Length: 169
Image 1 (cartoon, one colour):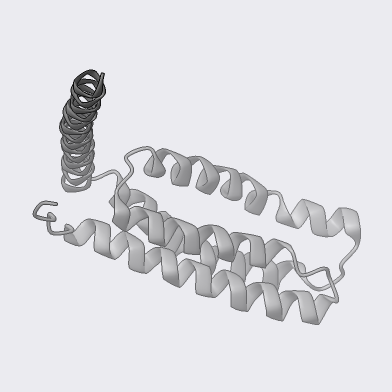
Image 2 (cartoon, helix red, strand yellow; image 1 turned 45 degrees about the horizontal axis):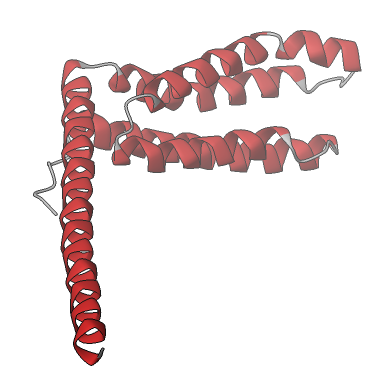
């Protein structure tokens, strides 16, 4: 189809940091949920999100860095209110560990988000968008040409059938 552009280091690093954040979310979710006997949804949801982001970052849809930034900001707000949630739900003694672990998990995600907003990354996503647009245009042209050839053959068959039917009369 075409030459694939090399993925910039900033995008590669952002993907790796997203994998790290996903791993930390899975590990933290398992450890904290087992220790506190909580449902296993919070850490695993974040882990699944960061795995999805790591895969999407490398592919290059430009809107993905907006999605990642929004969800990261939402996660940051939730993390900031974690101590308040612990007080409200009276999980005694868990708050310091949660704060430390949430911060450790938050740092690689922050680094990934910062890397997604660098100039090299933006240029890569623009190029990826242009390549996708060109490929879609090529496919459209190929389909149009194929349809034209098919239509010509169809008309030729009809004309041939018509002439045969006229010659039989």
